[in-house]
Length: 400
Length: 209
Figure (cartoon, rainbow over the protein chains, first blue to last red):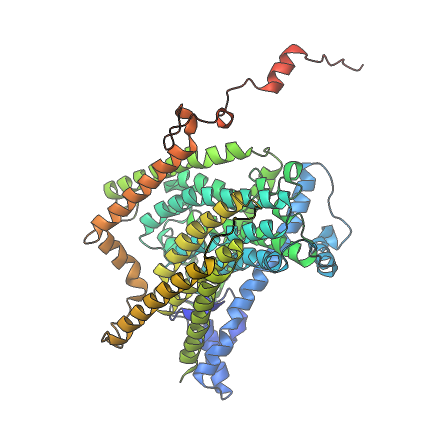
């Protein structure tokens, strides 16, 4: 995670439990909970210099986000199995833990212990590098996902743009693994994945651009802050309904979820670029696709569903209960509520994605490209134009 | 030297080494696929250098345009025409290599001379940091408007060229060579097989009692 440490104004406040910084964190509450300063002062009390304390602090939020991403994947895999089973009137995993919650863990362990096979005629170096290039940008993108006012690894100024840029690295990894497998199905799958990813990135970026235009900032924190004020009514989904649909369709296509899972269409391409992979390398692809799904859902909730905002403004609730918003206890409750709301919205969208998987058939490759280039792209352009016009006409509502 | 400075220095060393070695690899490796992937690595390392200079917008743009678009396009082109064929031996290959090496070395010498004779203002102006996005936008729509628009005209020309190349069926003869178009390449309108079949021999499903 070079990027995180390279940005000088890093505000590394991870979605940590409020208890991490101890009781002293409640003393510094002016802009929100400042876990870093309390952690640093704790270490400086033990006789470390501020620089060393900062160095000890730096990896903590990153590790926490990494763990959160992996746990999020485990939950998603379990949900996928259970919801798929419910859709098809089966029971699904049942015996591994209560309601089968340990099933994803068992899957992961199985993949971990499987033999790591590199086919004899494959290109060993590229074959190994491919899955890594697929996973790393996805995990790096968690850098900009906010769970609260200060609860993100780094409030990078280019925020959402960084995510778009990072997600454009992924097709190279897919092409690499498709090519290195030395298998026609793999190569076709890799080419399809890259083509799909490039085609849908453009309408996706245009949909994001409309939101960015309304909030006058690329930073994810600013985008969420622009949606606060009137609770559920001020969320972007009411101002950008078309953009929301475009973004969600494109995000599904970027994640290669059904109905857009052409790169690994099992009836046509065996398993696409994953065909020759086994063991942990396959697990990296699997992990990457699910982390990407959760990440996309999180970003939809940030861009269109008010991020960490509660449907009723927290200030009103605190006022109704006769509490000050700046009181330490209220701040802790608000922070936890923010994390819960972000995750809840994201998992609602994940639920929809899983439901979609069993409701709609897969599109053909020509339909996929037609939809992307001839339908979504013009609609996204018109949406951008209309947003710009509305912003000029009603600066109060559409961000002046 | 503080920890931040030394980290920055180490990052700079690693990124510079990646750029130099990667660029040499792009030129010298015989396998064109490796060259293309290494080119992506070089672009990424350059983006890292921009990041070290506090130009995060430029870094992200570099990543998106050069890695995400240009390099993927190059890879696509290589993989779509990846024919295994032995190329005919080029006469005087050694001489050609020596000549091109000499030209490149001369260019490098020229650049180095410019580098060492220019009075650089060190340390340069303070970095704009996060405000760079706004500054770039202002410049693009004021004093750099003409180059910006000309670049888009260039892209439009490339797009029209691509359409002409891809849709040869519109023309009866090739626009470039003047020969008749290979009729096998033209997409023929044909009746969908399955629908026809269903109309003619629709199997009547007997309802099982």
